[in-house]
Length: 400
Image (cartoon, rainbow, N blue to C red; front, top):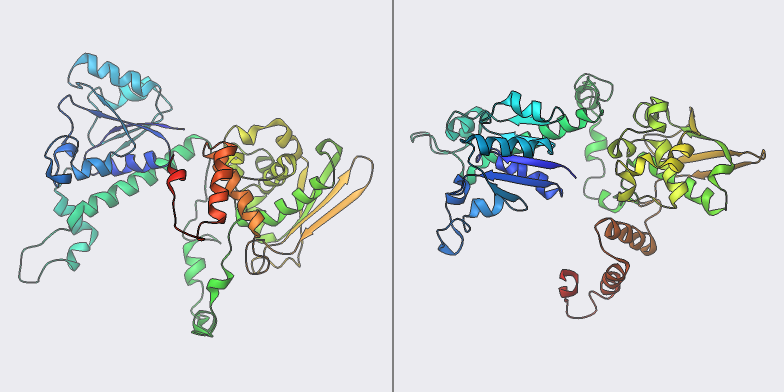
């Protein structure tokens, strides 16, 4: 869990709210009289006080609050103490103690500064939205609800998340637009469009029926390999008995899920684990299933899982149907010389093989456990949902 220090105004407060929604600790620093958001109309129930401002209630939801006099040396020192244990500082203007002092207090701190000296009306004009508002013969008008500033804050949150990923060693492609899997190649690499794929059988073929529900919270192309790993483990094979695992793969998946192989066998953090087939295979084999809890930074460092992931490698299958279909294959060579092989012809959860009720309940149990529910509460919720539509709907037990 991250700690985010929030020193923003209206144009940045929503960014901090987004981090709070993700379950991170967000501490909003306010003056003793309360910040400006508390005074921004409208007010709930017409109660004009510091707690009932609608924008305060919305933008500061899920945050903690601390009052500091940042004009005083004592208040500035308290802020630096907070930053020493923080991951992120969000600000609209330079912090009173200076950016250098903040970074000196915590060299690993991600400091995101929003520059918004111009009036909100200028932000609307720069965005192009002003061309859609008002009347031609009337003065320009802005949008209601401070929507442009909410959009600014959304980008602030995304930029901050990118900086956090970079801090933790995660890196992405440099050719987002012009690369093989970039925007231009994906949408504009040919002048001859396949319009039949877009409008063929329009009104008669419904693709909603083919939507897939993911069994595991990771890259979909890893799912068939996890299925194979779980079946191998169910045979009674132990991880220590495995000499190596070789997987046949589609060439188009290699750069994303297999290379660099050493990095994929030992992902640096939980997020990287989601896009590592060796790790996902090992996690499914060792733990019997794969859920949200398997993609924490601690989980990807589990010695037993890392050891098995190090035995997983790939070979390109020129006949693999990717990207038309996602398949899985593992050929496990055991220390005693035996070779055991498993194949999964498609991703479960879609049109080929919908998830069973048991699969869905199994995933719910993993999610509930990750969210902090104990077994009794989880089973109570499952029992309720099995008969949810049999009579009057009462969800009170889920709110306890």
